[in-house]
Structures are given as C-alpha cells and as structure tokens.
Image 1 (cartoon, rainbow, N blue to C red):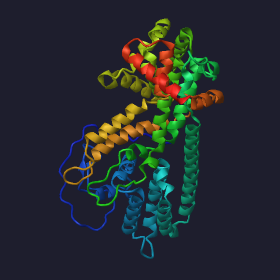
Image 2 (cartoon, one colour; image 1 turned 180 degrees about the vertical axis):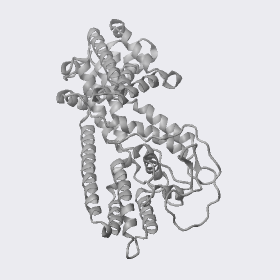
Image 3 (spheres, one colour; image 1 turned 60 degrees about the vertical axis):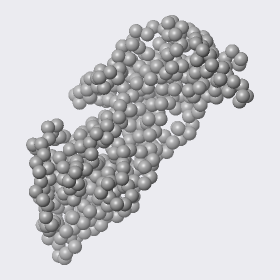
Image 4 (tube, rainbow, N blue to C red; image 1 turned 135 degrees about the vertical axis):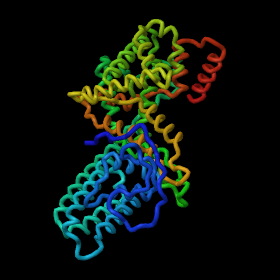
Length: 479
C-alpha cells in the first residue's frame, strides 16, 4: 500500500554548502547539501542526491526522500542510468567486487538494498519495463547472494510481483485504447430534426434514470482511469532538456510515457460532450428540461461521493454554449441545485470553494471506516494545472548547478496525496450496461451540438442565424 510521504517542512531554510571535494565513496548521507530546519534537503548536486539514496549497513534513507528523489530524478537522469549509479556506489562502498566478502557487513547491508529495490518496483513499476533495470537488480543480488542465498528468494518474489503489476498495467492500458476506439461520434448531418427524423439511438435516461446509480458508475470509470496513472507521468508530462546535459532529453517517446494521463483527460472531455449531447438531442423542450434536471441530480450525487472530476465534467457540459443558449429549456427546468453546485466549483479565488470542499473530502478519507467514505477524486485538470505552475514557477536547477530539491518536495507532496486517493477500491457494484453506454454512446461534435441547439430553439441574433445557415449548408453538402 502506498502511503503519502511525510516529514515535509513548509518552512525551508537554506544554508550555503561548503565546496565539495573529491573523496572516496562514503557510507550514509553525503554532506554539502542545503538542509531545511529538519533533515530534509532543499538543494544539492545530483551526485549528492544519488549518494543520499544509497543504503549502507548502517543507513537507510527516509521513505519521503526515496519517493521524492525517485519521482524527480528522471528529469535529470534516465531511470536505468540512475539504478546503474546506485549499484556502482553499493559495489564500491560494500566492496562487493572483492573476495572474500565481509559476510557480517553484507548481511546488514543486504536487507536494506532489497528494501530500496522493493520500494522502487512497487511505486514506479513502469521504470522496470526496460530490461536494463531488471538486469541491474539481478547483478547486485548476484554479488551479495554468496553471503545469504535467501536474497535470491526475496528478489524472485519482488520480480514476480513486478511482473504481475506490469501485466495488469498493460492490460489496463490496452482496455483504455479499446474503449477509445469504440467511442463514436454522431454525424452532424443527422441532427436536422426539421428536415429528417431524429437519429435512432438510446439515450441516458432509457439506460439509467437513477442519479445516484449513474454517479456510482461514473465513479467506477474515474477510479479505473486513476488506477493506471503512475506518479512518474506527472513529471514526464513536463520533461524538458536538462540545460546541464549535452545529450538528448531523458525521454524521447514522451507520448507513451504519459498515455494514461492523456486518456484520463480525454475521458473528461468525452463526459462533457456526452452531457451536452444528451441535453441537445431531444426534440421536445419538456424532455430537454427533464435531462437537465437529471444531470443536476447526478452532479449533486457526485459531489456527495467525493467525485469532483465527474462533477466538473457535468457542469462543464451543461455550461457549453449550445446548451446554455437554450433559454426556454432552462426556463422550464428546476435549476436551484445547479447554481449551488456551480458555486462550489466557481473558479473565483483560484477555485477557493472547490479547494475547501476537497480538503473536507480528504479529511473524511483519512478518518474513514469504509471505502465509500475514502473516495476522493480531484478535479484532474486543476491538479495538472497546479503541478504545471509549480514546474514553471520554480527552476529545476539553482544558479550554482544544484538540483532545487525544495521544489520537488512540494511536487512529491501533491503527487503523493493523489497516489493515496487513487488506490481506493470502488465500493459500488458495476452495472455493465451503464458503463458500456458511458464509453460508447455516440456524441456530437461542437458543430453538431450547435446545429442540434439551433434546431431545438431558433437562433436569436444575426450571428447565430449566419452560423446556423452555414452549418445546415455544410450538412446538405455532405448528404
């Protein structure tokens, strides 16, 4: 189970380090780094940070440090190279290239290096998709195994769990790709209700007319997407060329490295358009108003569950221009609850109301007795935005060339909190028919939404009339 890294001090004081000299490798954390009031480093050279990651017979880095450095180090050094450096330091410090080995010393060191490798494989399993990584694991264990054959057994258990986790990740990513391929769009030419009958298709209310049930199924989809997003994707989304590195950036195939994160953003956009499509599709005003009221109730249930991402997608869909312009439809709907929800997600004050509600949900999650109360699904685009501005607002390197570790402490805090939330097991029973509809129901393009909207309630001004005329002309041109 992943636990949020702790021990981060919000008030960090930095003392100037003494100039580093060439020394023989030493055991334990290396001096010459800027420290906070407590033990947390705020800045150091990359070499020093790597040295502080390496366990010895008498030293093991704090869990918070391990997570923070493994998360951020990929901005400066590819994971296989980092693991190679760690193994090299272990070999030198423990004299693992000499014979005979110091058995007593190695037996104290062995469990600690295995602990580090276990934490790495469990928290960042995608790093080990590269064969080099597993090769480094086996090499270091081969060197210490003569002192205790049990190390091989432990490594095999670690590799077995890693293999299972990677298989699950691959299966999950393949299913997301399959769902994306199955999702379809409604042809814009099918929405001219006054010239053609409406398209023959099911609608949401015919599949599910209970707001709480739909909110539960949306939570299933959200938690499924979250389960596939690794912590490293938040960093890899902003990878740039390291100015102190004369070679290529650490990751050349960036799209693949952030595929789960991108799939989750696509899901949010799909839900926005699905909500808008469901509202614009019915030919009768009364039916459209009924759909609006239904989605208001779904959004409220999402809020109560702690599913803020679906909540925002629903609100965004209802606020799209083709929907918001339907004044006669909105006039027939009961909208008091909608305005309350809009207030909760108001962007004013950097989403102050939402952030307050999120903190409340997070507190509830920490003291919860059931998975139902543990659910916290943040508004994902805002989380990405927060991380983006943290990345843009603080340099990765300080003027002296040191890594700005203080920045990555805050990054680790935000990502670590997300990692805790994403591990909640969904307590609601799956409804496959609803899930299938959410993933595959046809949706309008933006032009299709506008055309359906104008067919439902006629254009009110010349700009709308011109757009409607152009859209209809485009439709007739395709038939």
